[in-house]
Image (cartoon, rainbow, N blue to C red; front, side, top):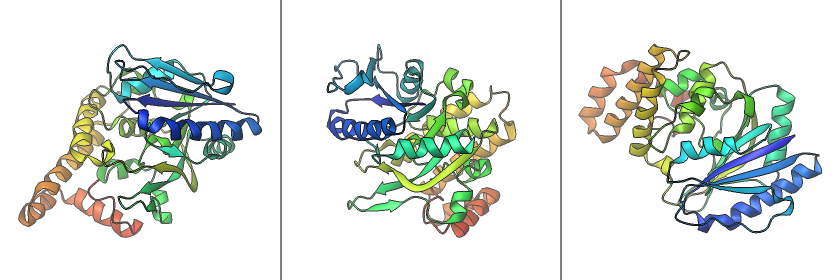
Length: 294
C-alpha cells in the first residue's frame, strides 16, 4: 500500500524542518508495516526555489506551479503527480503524529470506507492543546450532511483525514474554487452528497499549530471561499438545489450574526429560525462552545 501526502507550499520555509521530520518518522513506521510513503510538495510561490534535504529513496517530490494558483489548484496538481492508494492533504504549517499515517491506513483499510477522520489537537494561543471532538454526540455529527449545511464544517483540516484515492470526486478535481479557504469544505460536501462513507480514529493524530495567521480562523476569508464554491455547486447534477439554498442561508446568517449588535442578532435569528435552532441543538448535544459561529 502506498500513502501520498500532498502539501501546497507557499513561502513556508519556517515550517519545513518540522514538516520533513514528521514525514520521515511516518515513512519509517509505514515501512515497518510493509507500506510506502510518497510526499508531494507543490510550490505555489514559484518566485522562490523550494529545496528539501536529500531523502532516502527520494520519497519527497517537489513540483512548482507556473504561477501562484491557490490552495485548491495546488492540491489538484499534487494529485496529478502522486500514485498513492490513500491520499492526505496536509497543510505546510500542520503536523501529524509520528505514526499517524500507519494507524490511519490500518483503520481505513479494515473499514472498507472511503475516508478515515482522526481527532485533532488544536494549539491554543497560550501554547496549550485542546482535543476537537470531546463527546460521542459530536463524533456522530462529524460526517453528517445536514450539520455541514446548517451548522458548518466539522473537520478542522484535511490533515485529519486519509482518503481512498478513488473516492475523491471528479467534480472537485475539475471545478476549482478560486478563493482560498474552503476547498476542503467543498470536498466533504461533495463526498457526502455522493454517499461516501467515513470511519473514525478517535485518537488525536493530527496537530493544528497556532500561527496567528491561520486562514481557517479568518471567517471572512472562508465565507468568501464558500460563496465561491456555492456557485460551482449549482452545476453539480447530484448536489440537491435545496441543500445549496440552506448552505447559502447559513453562511449569510452567521456572517450577519457575527457583525450585529444584540437586536440585530435577535432579528436575523428570528428570520433564520430553523438554522438558529439547529445550532442551539448542536451546541447542547455536543457540549462544545465551538460550532455556532464556525
